[in-house]
Amino acid sequence: MTRGLPRRFLDLLTRPRVRGAAWWSVVSRVPVYLMSLALVLTVREQGGSYAQAGLTAALYTLGMALGSPLIARRLDRDGRAAVLTATAVAYPAALAVLVWATRPGGWGQPVAALVAGVVLPPANACMRSLWARLPLRKEERETAYLWEALLTEVLVIGAPLMLAALMLVGSAGLALTAVAVVGGLGTLGLAYTRLPDGTEGAPAAGPGGAGHPLGPLREPALLALAGVMAVSAVPIGLLTLAIPAFVDRHGAPGGAGLVYACWGVGSALGALWLGRSQSRVAPGVRLPRLLLAYALGTGLTLLAGSQPGLAVALAVGSVPIALVSATEMTLVSGIADERSMAEAFTWASLATVLGDALGQQAGGLLMDPFGPRVVFAAATGTALAAAALALACRGLLTRQAAPEAECAA
Image 1 (cartoon, rainbow, N blue to C red):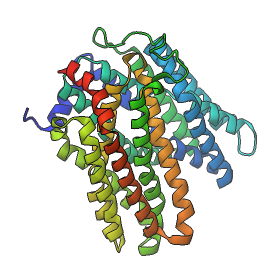
Image 2 (tube, one colour):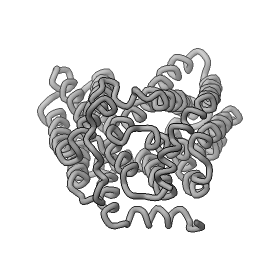
Image 3 (tube, rainbow, N blue to C red):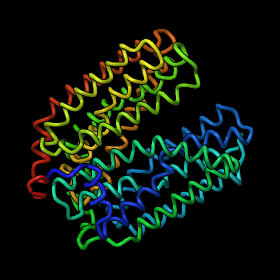
């Protein structure tokens, strides 16, 4: 198939009984990529300290970590309509209470933030599990997960810009509320859009499903993949700390945003440039290769001697990042039991969040005594470790993903 990747995206996203879910899912996921920043800005606007703002954002993230596997398990067990409707109402309600009924310094605001994190609509897990169940050919499913990875990059760059635009015409609290309501409406759209027959899958129950306390984590291949994903996310967290520190020393502090943008743009362009040829290689074989390329790309930051040099290094070095993410999603869909697909995607996402958080913590500890170059080196070494771990697990991942590939074919 020689069609370009943009055309393949368009064909997939405009298909009857697919386009509704795909586009509603985009709307429903906008809050995911800006809410922590919006919470900090809102608490500060209300007169709270940075410590209070940080606590609010941290409790929101903690709520996500605690609640998302449970919500996803209910999604597998009860289906889209019930779970997405409940969270579509509860999530904006909790954030509205946080903005309009609480103030910094009291107990209400941290509690509201924790509750909002717990009831965050599981749009990511829902849509990715639907891609695994929709009647698609193998190449189309690969395209779907590449779209998911590209969408993440677009939302990471675009959602904060949307928040900034909303704040030009109103307060941070009003902008946060508006984004939460829009996300809730998108979740309702995702809940009730029509899908092809048989897409919903069977309820998860019994010893092979989500009824077991560990759910999909009983599968060794998924545990191995989650470990790879966690380790490969650590360099992202390390670079998140090192980039502004480097820019502060070698340029204007205000230029950090532009350098970050180059990082995301490089990843998005890499998906568009190289994504078309990825499905020719088995995902279990592809992942170690992409992670090695990711490690080498991360190592380019060690050569940067100026702010423009770092921007170029990040733009070039980030080319494999979206491809890594897409390959990981493909592997999850091949490894997980169909009855617990949403929970499997949730655990995979949490592994990435945990790795990112560990990287940021490690970057903060290394920055003051050693500076950004040592953090860049640590990021490169950790990325190499992720590639080595993926190579060690290649046989397990390839065996487990093979049945899904044969079925799709």
